[in-house]
Amino acid sequence: MKRKIIITDDGSSSLELLDVKEQYHSTFGAIQEAQFVYLKNGLKHFINCHNAKSISVLEMGFGTGLNAFLTFLLSEEERININYTGIEAFPLNADEVSQLNYVEQLKVKEYASVFGRFHNIKHNKQIQITPNFRLTLNTGSIEEYEALPQFDVIYFDAFGPAIQPELWTIAIFKKMYNCLLPQGVLVTYSAKGQVRRNMQKVGFKVERLTGPPGKREMLRATKP
Ligand SMILES: C[S@@+](CC[C@H](N)C(=O)[O-])C[C@H]1O[C@@H](n2cnc3c(N)ncnc32)[C@H](O)[C@@H]1O
Image (cartoon, rainbow, N blue to C red; front, side, top):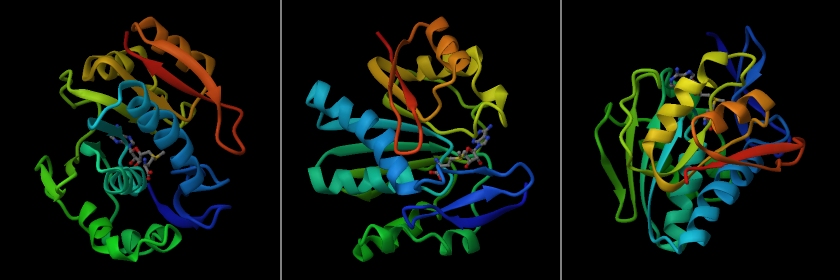
């Protein structure tokens, strides 16, 4: 599908699928949404609940690498060990990556090369980016991904249920459930009733949380 770079309301860049007018992030702010949904209500929540110093994160829909980059920055600030796996069926090309402004917006020029590296690693090869952060990028589809219980936190960041209904199903959430360790959490920006019910059907305990600016609610699912 054709896509173009856009600038969201907090000044940070994102992408839009032209045919279906679907964005990779909230148009109210890409960085703002990522910080709120995935970092605050996902990763930091898990760290606080478990006093965790070593965490394994799975991202469904790696896309621009924004969630991975924010997670990397947290690992540096807090000296927390992160093992990060991204799944991405349609990786960005070099021209698209060069137009993303996250390094400037976050004022972290010293990590520009790290962000560049995120988009330059071989399929399924684990790369030690820094002593605190390891990254594996799986450039296949979630449908083909083999689920093993090894993750503490899942960032579930597929396109919306209206665009990709096949990714918000009982079968996919069962796979996500199987990927998590006990007490692991999955967070997502969607708060649709059917999505919540599908999560509950596979055994998740689901909370409806206040959403990021511009969105009423989001979901956090915990594996008992
Ligand atoms: C809403 S965007 C989120 C992007 C990303 N989290 C970011 O911060 O840029 C959804 C992402 O899921 C990817 N995707 C779509 N279908 C997929 C599939 N079946 N398996 C894996 N990735 C998929 C898309 O290419 C896109 O990068």
